[in-house]
Amino acid sequence: MVSRYVSPLESLFWPNGFSRDMWMILDGARDPRVYSSLIHSYSEYSCLYAGNLAPALERAAPYLVQLEFEDRYTRILLEQAWGNSWGIILKCNESIDVVRRHLRKFLRVIGRNGRPLVFRYYDPRVMRVYLPTCNREELREIFGPIKAFYMEDPDPATIWDCRLDTGKLSIAKLPLAL
Image (tube, rainbow, N blue to C red; front, side, top):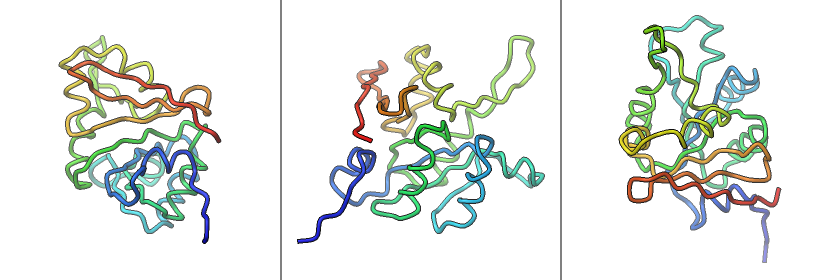
């Protein structure tokens, strides 16, 4: 019998084996390896920004990437990203177009002075602060078709599992045996 190592993150994201409902929003601005790893992978991904981008913005943009069960690139990506605030992970059983369209709605917010600002909600340090401040309507809007958001805790040995439970935010802080 051949045994294979399954990381704690893989066990959490794919408890029953293969499924195509795990996604990650990667922040290209966090590390130059984010963009270079995407363009050299076989993973399905899409930039959350629209249109033709200047090369510097293209490299620093947020990207939606589908995570794959037992996939070499997914494992490498999770290993590199975890503990480095490269992005957030989400569970959603929709196509990349549906997920991207939903997530694009939150890229800009209006500041106190009435000017538009970029909202980097895909940074786990931002999302950990933002989600608990949301009211029921805001939670319904941000979750939309998303079943769960996952993000690293300031201590990377802990993961936040954020879900809607009867309209309220439920946050489970789960230990990871890294």
